[in-house]
Structures are given as structure tokens and as C-alpha cells.
Picture 1 (spheres, rainbow, N blue to C red):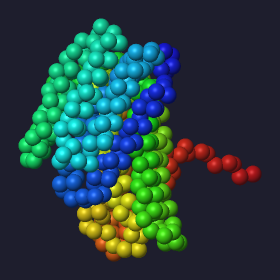
Picture 2 (picture 1 turned 180 degrees about the vertical axis):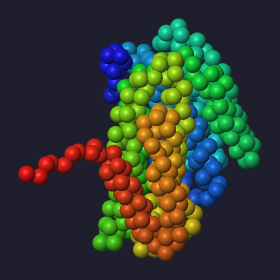
Picture 3 (picture 1 turned 90 degrees about the horizontal axis):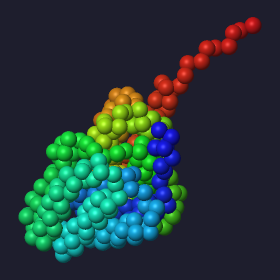
Picture 4 (picture 1 turned 180 degrees about the horizontal axis):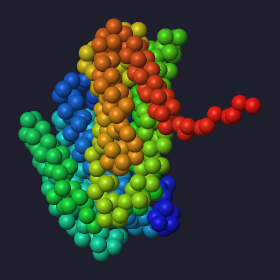
Length: 374
């Protein structure tokens, strides 16, 4: 256990994660530009494909430390491929589809190659079982990017579905080794930088208008909403998640990791992207009403984030999520408020989440005996 706890995130991994900041920025821009069912579908497909492989790189550095020159160079090559994927996002369902597909195939190739060259025999067998599924998914992405049109949606949907059922096909990622401290810390940093994108979106929206008291107030509400997202995830759950993962038998950790940090973190990230896209519009028009689609993105994005957090906590058995599930329903109920003014929905969501956090803190606070009255 002491050896596992000694494995922590390296500065190269943090540098690698800077690409993810750009990826979230690009996805947010796509949804902000086209807040519709088609825009949402595009973002869901791209985020699902990207998160599958990005999370795969987290698993990679969890097992293969980037402590040698050749490993660092290979990892930087994967970073370059991810950068091309991110650059292609705005036009991925158009002229950039083929570039997205080629870069994605490179991402898969680098991942498989580095995993295969630097792991134990047990993990190598697991990687050998995983590689054909990843390669097939990447080829579907490439074929869809080249084909374009309806075929692209069909092929990318197939790749998305195929990737996320792969853990069941390979028996829950059995054979991979998990170092709990590193694994939880790395995913926490990814969530943190994604939440940071929502703050960037607030700044981008505010930059479109002259700063006045109303704009400052709405920007502060946007920051408060991002702070609530941070508190919901980092207010103790990260530490409990590490403890839960460390306490699990090594053979069960891969399945727990797939569920908690794969599936449910996808929902967390999708919620953050939707919130950031809506905030960018809301802050740009602080006194006006939001379009129905933008209001839905803000309310539903918050709800999806809460649901993802509930399922994350439930997978690791680290807390009761009943109150957060109820808050998700109430977040949806805020949607009509934005049809009157964006500030009403933002303010109500902040009050809702602050109230949730305060209520949970009081419920979990230790009951101390009162001092005896002399």
C-alpha cells in the first residue's frame, strides 16, 4: 500500500492535461454556437470518443510512469495527436472530419504502443485484449469522418457505443493494475480543469459587453456556480474515493475504476460543458431572457452533473446521494426562470446548490455533546 500511495501525478501528466483544457474549450464553443439537439448530439459523440481515449491515457500513466526519455517522447506524441483532435472539433462534422479521424487513430496507436512496451506481463495480456476493440473503434471514427453526412453520425455512434461496452466484453478491464492515489488524483485534476473552463466561459461572455454593475453581478453568479461544482466534487469525495479504491481488492479495482471514473465522469464532464456553453451566453446578455435551448442547457447541464456525481458516489459507496438526486430534479425546474431573465436562473441554481451543500454539511457534522450547565 505504501508503494501505491507513493505514485503521484507527474508534471508531464499535468502538461498533457493542458490539451484537455483546449478540448473542453472547443466542445463548449460548438455547443454555444449551436445550442440544439444536433449540436448536443455532436458534442456527446465527440466527448464520448475523446474521453474514452483520454481516460485511457490516465490508465496508461497509472501503470507506466513517464520517467524515461523514450516514454516522455512517446507521450508527447500522443499529446500532439490529441491537439490535432481538439483543433478538428469545430469542423469535425464537416471538412475536419477526416483530420479528426486520422488524429484519433494516432492517439489509439500511441496509447497501445506505449502500454505494450512498458507494463507487466499481466497488464500486457489485458492490453492485447483491449487493443483490437480500440483499433476497430478508431477505424469507425476515421471512416465516419471521411464519409460525412448521415453516415458519420451512424459510424461515430457505433464507435461510441462499441467503446463504452468494451469493458463488459473484456470482463471489466480485468488484468489492469490500479494505483489508487495516482488514479484518483489524476481524474480529480481533469475535473478541476474542466470546471476551470466554465470560468473561462464566464470571462468570454463578459468580454462581449462593457462592464457595469449588472454584468459584474451576473459574472459573480457564474463564478459562484462553478465554485459549487468544485465543492460538490472536491468537498471530501475525492479523499473518500481514494480510500474506497484502495480498500477494494486489486482484482475488483479495474471494474470500480471503469464505472466510477469512466462512465460517471463522462456525465460530469458533459454537465460541465453544457453549463459552460450556457453561461457564456447568459453572461453576455445578463438582463435579457435566454433562448429555451440555452436555458435547458444550463438547467439540464447542472442536473446531469449532479446525477453523474450521485452515480460516482454510489459506485464507490462513499455517500448517500439522495439529496443530490433531488437537487438534480429541482435544477430542471429552474429552466422556465431563464425565459424571464438569465440572472434569475443563475441565481436560483446557485442558491439551490449552496443550500444543498449547507444541508449536507449540517447532516454530516459530528453531534457534539453540549457542555454541562454549572
